[in-house]
Image (cartoon, rainbow, N blue to C red; front, side, top):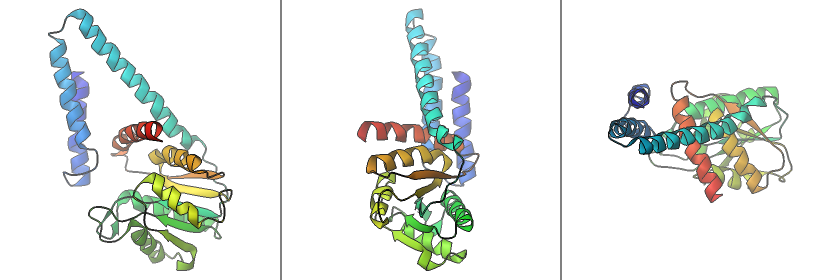
Amino acid sequence: MTELGIFCLLYFVLIRLAMGKWTSTFAGFWAAAGIGCLAVRLLTAYLPEWLETVVWFTFSVAVFIFLAVEIRIFSELLNKQEKKCDYLIVLGAHIEGDQVTNSLKRRLDKAMQYKEKFPKTRIIVSGGRGTGETVTEAEAMKKYLQQHGIKESCIEMEDQSMTTKENLAFSAAMLPDMNCPVGIVTNNFHIYRARQYARKLGYQNTCGIPAGCSRILLLNYAVREFFAVWKMWILG
């Protein structure tokens, strides 16, 4: 437990250094987890043996549940065959002002790679305007695609959504019907949840098109996604 606590605190510092700021999403979890692990390790030294066993059993169950969910999350990546889709929906992500961030850039680059392979595919960029954003995510995404040679006539914008579920719900209005083949473009750790929402919303023919993410931040994103998936399961 001591080693895990130290790892969490060091990873917290690494995230801060990699992001170059102290307000990056979810990073505070690692500081809290690190302090929590060290506190538990200290407390167990004063607990009776039976209670210490309960603590370790609870921790083991939590680890098992975490790994089981992560396997489901990343199992979506095993199907790497790209099929021809009439539409791509590129899910939005946070932008800085009007500039796309690394995660969103990776999604857009992946969409452009796909369109090179299937030129007739139309692209729907989906995302509203959040905190710290001077334009909608959809506007920033469209601008980026146009700057990289994608014609405006090939791009449709959905600029009202604020969540993954809304991305897909509002983008559905731009499809001819829910049976047409749709590729969902997002980062690898996000594909499972996005496709689950798509199924719940009535999409009949989707495939996941995963973009990569920062190797340093993958663990951070994967743990954050664990909680997001449970929220989806509980709240629908």
